[in-house]
Length: 532
Image (cartoon, rainbow, N blue to C red; front, side, top):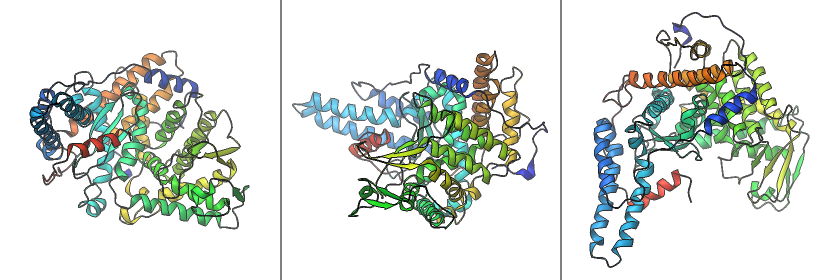
């Protein structure tokens, strides 16, 4: 974690924040993501177990010993179980179809779980994967190297003992997090393969890896944060100063929010507390992005969300879920508003300017002005609840403050801001690096406090600086190339997959991996892939 008292960075002039033309940035991102990328797939249509055996053997040579019990042995055990089943099928009259069914299950398991090995061993994607692992390790170590959090969670199955492994998935997939379990006591992170071509978009890992990837390991965090948001919103809406435009909601959806209620109406304040609770996981992950990557995470979030929609604009519609769910997806616009507001809680020299610049980008991504209403729709899309934008905008400061500053037991009675923070020194490092990334004489060796997260943020900042230039195509390609090379250099410097990493003491597992039934492991793989 950066420390302002140890500012050993080169002294360079500071400049007020500026962003390039949003349409140009969006066009660049879409063009890069449309570039075809294929990932190795050695496990398709296997005729025997030879490819699986070779992968396990390669894994023992490729990864240090501390990964063997937690990861390689799990793959080896699943292979051994499959081979035992195949041996039993030798006397079955339907042995051909049943044999293929066993091989297909093994293929499905290895396609996901062994992907880190395959891609690390691939000449095509090894450099990008090492860069990605440098960023993932940086985000993990910032959180889990905290001694108080480690003490609270060390005995929990889900608490990671070693750095996560990672891999690139099919282009149309979503980022994924595999939390440690008794069956596989290791975290695995993934991102769509087409993002290999777009380093400036890697700031989004502040949400997925730095947010969901961290919180999934903390017992009680989800319900504690949901409770903090609910309590904060209830306090605000109960104050005399809060005067919502909408007083009462009448809808068929009231029974979804408050089960067993006879009347189909509820106070708007009660509804606002409900959506704060149901959005808590996603909003908290965004706050982790802000605290890990600063203003450039907020910028990247707006770009990322706008890119997902054909019209290139932020959504103001979201699904409405039942009372017990905490992982509903908020409207894009609400996410961006809360993330911008969170910057007020960081001690940045240009914090106010960043809020103004990013607010203007948000408006551009909304077509120039905020929509008049937000819409919350049932899964069937038949019913919806419409609330004035002004009401939710009035709650944004409350949401941001609760997310950043609520002290939670799962964080050792501290707030997220006390565990993670983005300081003005971090901003300075990003400013300095962003001005260098597009240069032919690029270097970073004098930046002694440089971390992988800084490189990710600087790549997007550098793109913003050159996107309107006539040489934008050449300069942006250089930014991507230099940024990846820097991340790869950090990967080797920290020796992430060496016997002993250089960022600190290696945490070694106890070697008690469980023998997992093939069907159970297959179910976990399908859950990871988002299948039913």
